[in-house]
Amino acid sequence: MKRSATVLLLCLLSLCLLSACNTVKGVGKDIQKAGEKIEDVSGK
Image (cartoon, rainbow, N blue to C red):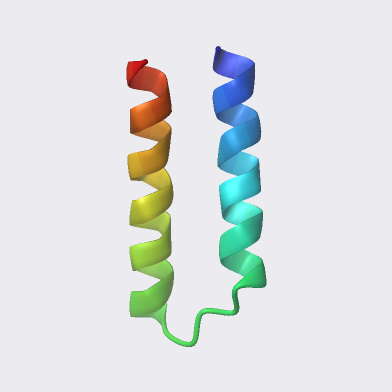
């Protein structure tokens, strides 16, 4: 489970970087969404 959460985190971070956020605020929102997804996965 820990490995899959790590892989998911790396994928989400890569997606954030590739989505070309225009502002620091936008990056923060993307990171927050990624954290929420990781919490959802780890809760299962």
